[in-house]
Length: 101
Length: 101
DNA sequence: TAAGTATTTCGCAAAATTACGAAATGAATT
DNA sequence: AATTCATTTCGTAATTTTGCGAAATACTTA
Image (tube, each protein chain N blue to C red):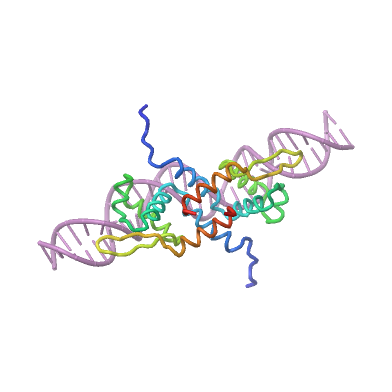
């Protein structure tokens, strides 16, 4: 199989992926909260605070995890969610380049 | 009709909207190009450069327009596309806040 | 080992996104 | 008035996203 020429650069693809993760108000709310607190929070607290179904919340958390922006720390029976600092820094860098900051 | 309490702040909603516009590699590519050139470019040139259908490109341009990130200047039979500087500055500000830059 | 708790996965339905070719549009030229 | 050109809109199909309740999971406690 010949190496398919890539249409877009890795940075472009990664920035698009992160942007998708940030493209829903709920997910932004979560990210905002986690990065402001510089701490962690529980899934259930967020669900109650936002009057949103637990399974719905879980799905959004999963997407943020998939994009690498957050990580969960098991603390039974809870799970504490935190910003993934390394990837958050990567995201910051990508947007700085995009916006020429 | 009672004023519905808003779940998310205006900034959050706007940031989500902009993120959605930036969540596709092609749209990022266009934005990147336009903001780097600090100039304009034609739809057809992009379509050829990227080997993508004209109607597909048009649809993506429409989304960027809808989010307010670009604007088209009619110059028959061409349309020149440019960054909307005012809204681009707004976007930069929103991401600066999000990333605490 | 059974019950209780927080969270996730599953199954589903509605809506949105993505991509394309064909047809329509709008403006200049013949 | 007909033609030409770049672009958009339309119609369609495949895929993804979103949201929810019910069921499953995993771990602690009684």
